[in-house]
Image 1 (cartoon, helix red, strand yellow):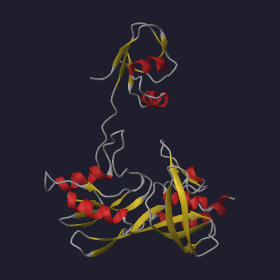
Image 2 (cartoon, helix red, strand yellow):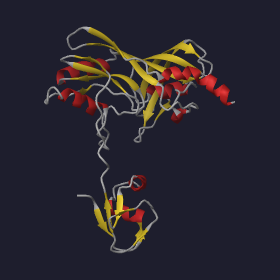
Image 3 (cartoon, one colour):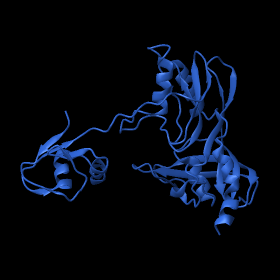
Image 4 (cartoon, helix red, strand yellow):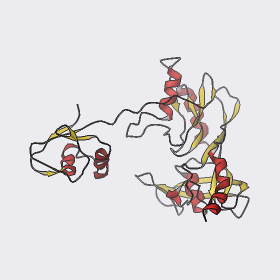
Length: 294
């Protein structure tokens, strides 16, 4: 049943919603209104300051269920693992908001079409805004085998990114200490700050295009937003990352996990790659577009 509340005294609608969902923030309650999920006496209402009278019945309706999209971009699959390309904008796995359409749910749908008991075990993750290669294990044993390699920094992880500006050097290493708060915001702090973790990224310039540069990155650690924060700290935020100071917005973050080298559960070294999306090529034309608009 949908949560309902009968108004005991005249008040504004937003205040009445706090009676229905006392654990929710005002921001969440406002989202319920803008998402057309609130009805007063069976009529949809969106105005937070609408005055509702005593005896009015308020009902909050659930979000429409997300459709789980079909799995695309399978790079490799065998009895032990499945390796796929994650699109930008898709979560690797659901958060506490219980999103239905995630990369993990797509992988499960794909696996369970041929075996109802199959499962995809999460080995590592990519940030929502990042696209690229990611591994899922098909058993607990394979999961542990792979995760041990990640924790021991034995997996080679390569990324391609477009950054704003041109680094002075052709290559370099970024070593910072990062800290993350409860809202998942990440920033650089001094070494030794309680709760901080070391982040190590090596970068190499592939192309210089005036306003932007294409770089390749090799990460030793896997901290949240590691590449984004570290490149911004160096004065070269990733294109499409206004949160960390980027000026150009092509509609997505230009960061792609291009390849992984790891030891397969069968004991053999495996190197797999994910093709760089075509939108990365548009970044080289940013200078031309800016000149046209001047």
